Length: 88
Image (cartoon, rainbow, N blue to C red; front, side):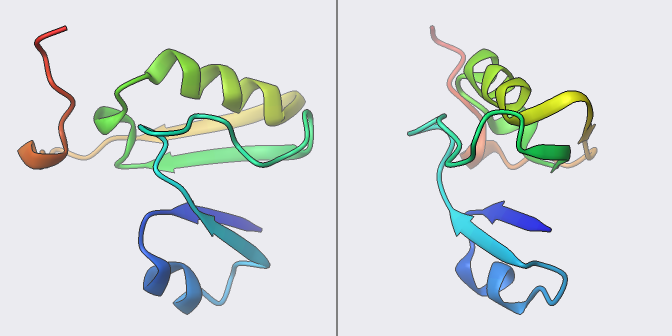
């Protein structure tokens, strides 16, 4: 199991992860994974903060194997300081 996030302490404390990396997908959308290398993906409470959601979605499709599944979970909370600007 591979983890990705912005908080090193959370990633390092997760005993389920075989490996992890830190990356801000608003700054760099490229995932450091081979194409078709993931059986599944999951995003929890992060999609609503993406500034380039189309590019992130394309990367997720690239790294998922054919027939792989992607789960996107939203919460009812909103952290306004993390929300993308709406002035574009």
